[in-house]
Length: 125
Image 1 (cartoon, rainbow, N blue to C red):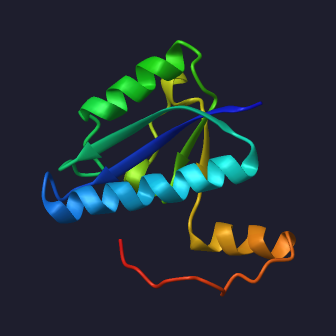
Image 2: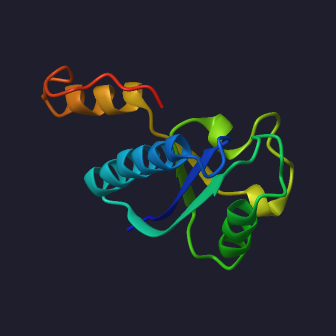
């Protein structure tokens, strides 16, 4: 079974909106991991940090844990949650990045024969 980590980020700090946004990201990614048979070893979240700022506590922890071999895949709702700009060329960034967004979820529901429109709510994160 593939080991994965979940990474969430918002730049709104500790505001209520930021906490809700992180919670929504995490739930979506946990749901995807469960449906895909991935083992989530840990989840990481940074609130109040810009995407181009590499000096984020949870991101640093994620990179250290990856270097220790704790997971091979990182789940994110958008590439810019992990980093805005070019991914640094470093062995610490050698993990697979899986973007799980609405389009990903719809494609999987269609492949499974489900109705992607049933029970969907429009939310902005």
